[in-house]
View 1 (cartoon, rainbow, N blue to C red):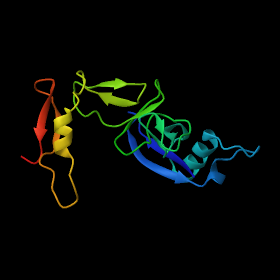
View 2 (view 1 turned 60 degrees about the vertical axis):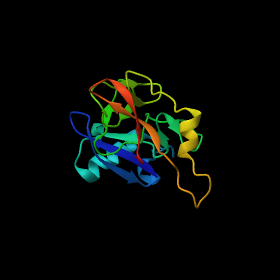
View 3 (view 1 turned 180 degrees about the vertical axis):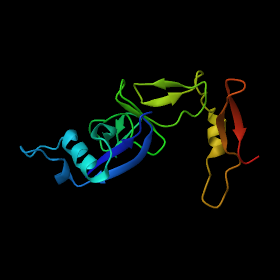
View 4 (view 1 turned 90 degrees about the horizontal axis):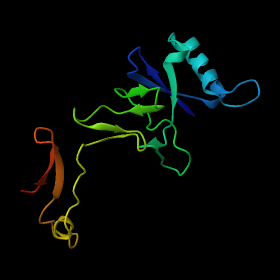
Length: 154
């Protein structure tokens, strides 16, 4: 199966369609993006160059099955196609965050702190019958441009 993102003139993903591989195979029997694009244009009345192939198995520039990552992330509705970097970007989570083209993900301008050993221990259930005493985590605070430590069980 081959997946293609339908994009508009602003490179925003409007839909993602999956095709049988036979609809993407050229006369030499090789799967090619351009053949799939032509098939989609013919059957969906949308320009071929506005269909961009995407990989279901790629997230944060890593192939989940150990293969080669393809276009940074599997496209989803609301993502943006970045042809300069060959990456599908999810929506930007905060105005201050920046693109990391190596990981195909958004990053805060300040690194997220690690939890302490004590906080991690409190997050872990001693056994199935005993609830965790805390659920520590960090959440981005756009106003202060910093990570706030929170306890979701408090």
